[in-house]
Structures are given as structure tokens and as C-alpha cells.
Image (cartoon, rainbow, N blue to C red; front, side, top):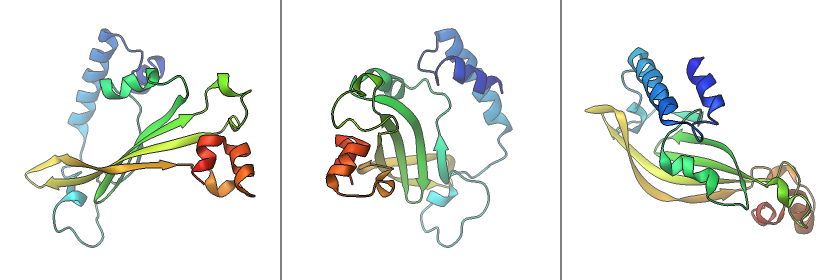
Length: 174
């Protein structure tokens, strides 16, 4: 609960002071020590086949807090979009870093800017491997990028309807 409150008050760490970053690091270190999962990277070991059981990193994750500069700088990178959800999708052999971009409020009156829910999801795709010798670490190699309109299936009609409903960038991804 303490980390969640800190994450909320610092906007996921984007506005954290050095003192708040130090506090988050202490909390995360305490949580890591309580983690009962000994082999979280096992689905990424070579020659893994069949059903993977036991707790592991597989699934969809949402970023709660970070102090990583490559992430915290995203909020300042472009005035043409507003940062939404940040997360990861872990599905062997891939790990995808997911960044949701929303239409900024100032663009609401522009033609072809979509509606208040318009968004594009950027996925940085990496191929991941791991070793039983280091079961807490994934080795990532860049594999590509995906740009997705997550609402594409909900927009019916022709191409111009898609652009009107989703906005020009998202409409082009139909």
C-alpha cells in the first residue's frame, strides 16, 4: 500500500524527488526479499516446451512506479500525445514494452483528431532468453515495433468513419 500511495503521489515516479526515489527503492528492496518465486524467468529458458506451471513473469503487467530515465522522459517527449498506460506483455519468446498514447486535450477541436478515447498503442518487441544460472534476469534483443489501434474492431463503417471516430493516426492503423 505504501508503494502504491507513493506511485500515485509522484505520478508513477515521473515527478519523484530524490528523497521519494530513495524511499521507493527501499520499499521495492523489501518487497523483493519477500518474493517466493525462485524461477520467474523459467518460461524463457532454452528448450522449454509444453505447459509452464508455477509463478513466473508471463502475462500482462502495468507499470506502477519507475525511476528509469528512458521511461520518465516519455512524458516530456511530445506535445502531440498524452502518455497513457505503460506496461509489458510477457509471452515467450517475446517481451513487449507497451506504451499507450492518447490524444491531448488541446487537439479536441482539430478535425480528424478522434474522440476523447482515441489512442495508439506502441509496442517495442524484444526476443527474450534466460538461463537457470540467473533465474531472475531476462536477456532482451530488439525484434521490432508494433503500432496498434486497440479500438480497431469497435469502429464499424468505412475508412473515413474510422478516421472520424478514432482520429487520423489511429484510423490509419485500421
